[in-house]
Image (cartoon, rainbow, N blue to C red):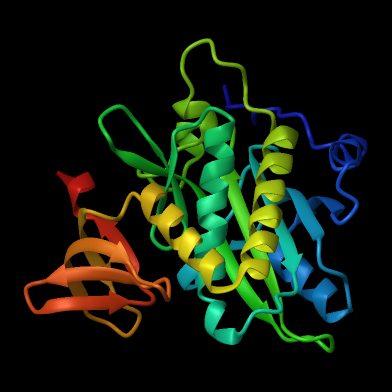
Length: 278
């Protein structure tokens, strides 16, 4: 007897249109199957699409993550989308955008009853009673050059009903797996609306608020960051490893790590929480 694929209800264009009806600055484009929502949104950006376009895939077949990783989500099991933004901030402020997105994805999931935190820079974790975090969402922010100026394509993938057998690694989880007995099944339309709205509202407030808004974002991010005050091992992009204790996030969005060689500020790297391996 062969295993039958899990049947999950698809997202409906009419339901998404109704859910976003109160937000005319957001335009949703739904695809039953797409290789990569970021690739589609990047194409739309170069074609002149306005800020606020949300490209959604019911089944993303060849998603791209940080460090050129690829992944596929089972059909109907995740919320996968890309939001097109056209930042007017200086290029020096762009490193804050991935952190803003991760922070607000975690905030949105928390508002829906999930115990979410962000791992620097922008992986979203669900944390259990023992304090162990498992990845539930990945984020990739890409800069796209267009005739109208640089655009930011915000790609987000959230595991919703993914089963343990469907997860790519044992350090991942899904909203359904982390839910308590008797909890209702997570609603993908509700999750999509909550997350997109949180990102857009936070981005608009941050962009309009200047230096003070960035400091408020930094403080709020640090308070929700599972990496701060944890022993870490950072695999650096150019090779090499940094081991120490993450103590803060600086005004430029870099992770501050106190190692045996002193204080290091990391702008990019793959972070492992050493505590989680014990």
